[in-house]
Length: 194
Length: 423
Image 1: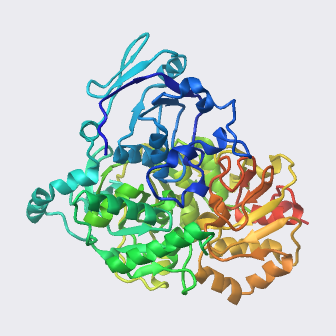
Image 2: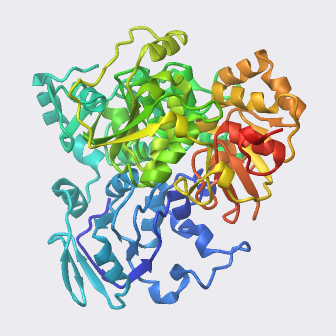
Image 3: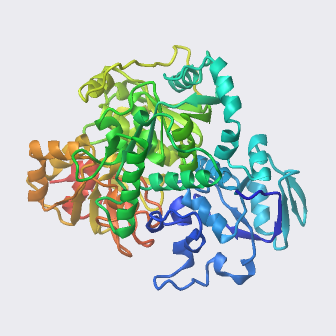
């Protein structure tokens, strides 16, 4: 997993609430399991028309946002199916940060398994961010989003922050400590079965 | 502690947990299917490349595998996924692999209760968001992403933050024309699709005591649509009988304490409940059926883990008996065991006489996979769980979510219909 420290680009404002994982990656692509290459399916039904031509009125198709790595979206982003493909697609497309007032639980968790940074900011701040046309900087180390109008700090679980900064996914990280875990377990009173 | 807290405390070897505690819990059962399974295999391949030992699962006897989303194989890619899944279970010694074309198989969340794979008090995780369904048996059941499932398969444990609990109390029985689906749609309409985000939704009260196990499964299934971590009902004798009749032994029940705490309690009067539909494009966008828009339906779809259990199909048969459908109607029993009972008890004849196409168990068109997906502008009434844009097919198709009774009554009239209003 790649580590994440800082990113500075313009934002892509997607002012929609309850964007579910089927909008992020439609079901017909779920059969594919390679983690790469899902970017072309991202927001498939919004990006392409029936003939698979790009729709000019969808924001991702505006060349202005081509190099944006920061997606700003409405409440409850990533609701619906638990498909991890949603995170793969956002990343493969080029996003490394998603900012929203709230995320669906499984999606939020899936982000950290793959090195995508979800940032929760309050409604008003997100509303303001939509208007931001210049570059903004997301600095994970200092937990700050720097915009033209000032700095906004954000909260993130320390362990999750470490995972992203060091580029360790949790399985790899945990298994590196296998020995210590086994030693601990020998002494712990947790029943091995219920 | 309430029931969810007690289960999590026990699974993590603690005396007591409170909402917000982060715990490391022993997992009792894990499920993967033909979409999450290949995803998990991919994670295993990646770990292997990093030099991590993935030769053995923590306990193959606690893992079970369903083939449901794209089966019978919808195309070549899904066929390959089934082969991959079969190799995986063979290599890792997983015996509980329910293969289509080889006896019992069906939708993963249906197998969990039909085959008594999960017992009360257990911690059960699955690679699917509707894993919440199984909380109706009095277990802690929730969905995970592929990576988390891979972790559990290797380690048998996972961390949870103990959720706050919302308690939904139903006073008195639901009227005969109202089903559990109507009640849960009403709740989602009231609290919104994020009203239960990272919370437990627990159901109780005399109306729930009166409810069958299968109705409770419908309630818990749809808690996913409110964003809940899990849905749960305190287990009673009905649950014990249900599981015992399916071969379960050693059932021990976990109950909440008398002084259990809930973040919020919602009360509903059973007698006041009405048939409900959720209009496109969200399960929270509800309307009383009698006030629903008068649209010309193209199709009625009766299937999925939410709406194709035996009880659901019995309700459908009650409506379709001696009647003909006016629009394309499909019924897909959620497992072979249900299909058999549908045949043995004469429901199959009622369905076929009414003009319905009866299909094999599969998630099918519920997730827009195959077996009757919707074309552009088609409008469907469906017993499934989600109606986001494009969920069942074309992004410009529309789905109204309803109970099996309403879906059947609407199949007869071609319009969204309250079962009481049928001639």
